[in-house]
Length: 58
Image (cartoon, rainbow, N blue to C red; front, side, top):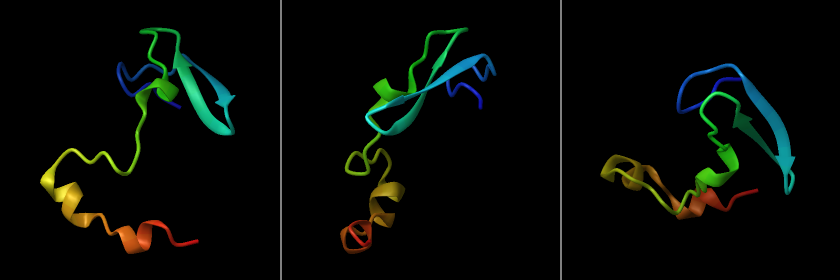
């Protein structure tokens, strides 16, 4: 596993509320503090691809 920020392989994996997260030893980046939710899409291209009918399917 690599850090998203600095691309270092020195990361510590851990679980937080049944979600796999990691913390980078090199730069201190924590993947659980990222708060990536499908509702928050950055570009117009991503917003166009999102379909609420397919998102809730189980």
